[in-house]
Length: 125
Image 1 (cartoon, rainbow, N blue to C red):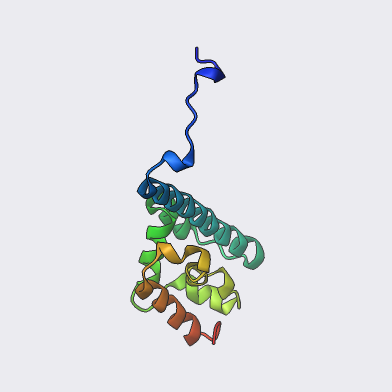
Image 2: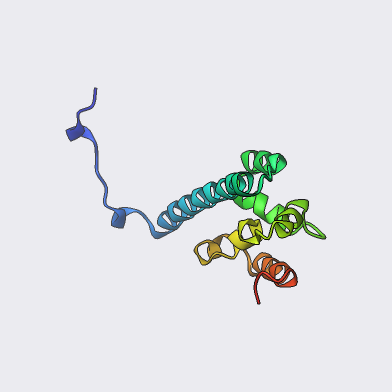
């Protein structure tokens, strides 16, 4: 059995910079995943819109890959249309992708698609 004295402690300065970036990206991806789940629960609770396929995609592909797939879908998604009808595009994947916190997770192209779609629907100017 190891005692706490046997545990080697390392300083973050000892971790190569590339590993630090990977750790930060993993944390950011995890946060994005949790925020994707949160928009599902809010849409369910506040609008009565239960997007079960959305939740399944998140579970299967993760938050970032799900967002990329949904955002780049030709013609948009049914979920986006539903949220627009409820006047809740703040709960859309597109709005979440545009959050500056997540800028490093998405290409400029994906972010531009989100921005353009939200402009088309009058959510942003």
